[in-house]
Every structure is written in C-alpha cells, then in structure tokens.
Length: 90
Image (tube, rainbow, N blue to C red; front, side):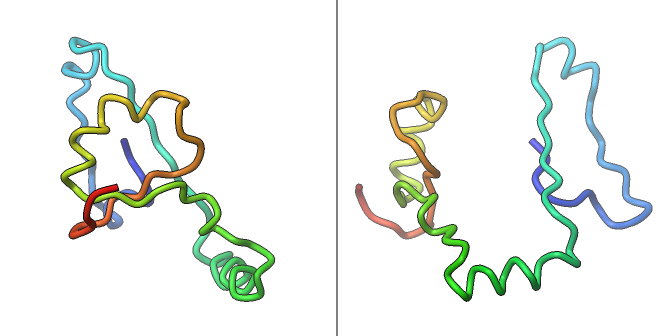
C-alpha cells in the first residue's frame, strides 16, 4: 500500500510485479491532497469546522494490533483504529 508521496524526484519505487501477479496481491494507493491546500485545511481544523478526531473510533497499542489484525477488514467497528506505540489495553 502506498500512502502519501512517492520517493524524491528521481527516486524509483521498486515493486516486484512478478511477485504481485504470482501471489495475486492487490496494490492500493492514496495520494491525498496538494501541499498548497494544507494551510486552508488546517485553518478549518483550528476553527472547528473540520473535526478529524471524530473519525477515530479507538486507539490501541502494538500488542492489541497483532490480535486485531485478522478482523480489521470486518465492518464491526466504524471509524479509524489508531495504533499508538506505548498505548495499553483497550
């Protein structure tokens, strides 16, 4: 999964396409938004017009992440599960 920007200019992300095909992997990506739009977005967050914290359903530690990984694709929990190092049990 590619989240964010690609490597610096001239960088070439190496994707072993033979393995992707042989293992029948899915390749997903997310570009996000242009850096020039960040100040306006941050202003909206600061004003309270956007509330991204409401998207977070729960915060877990690495110990819980391993146990929950098999069920992350289920629809039991709406929202984002954030993994924070050092976080204790649910």
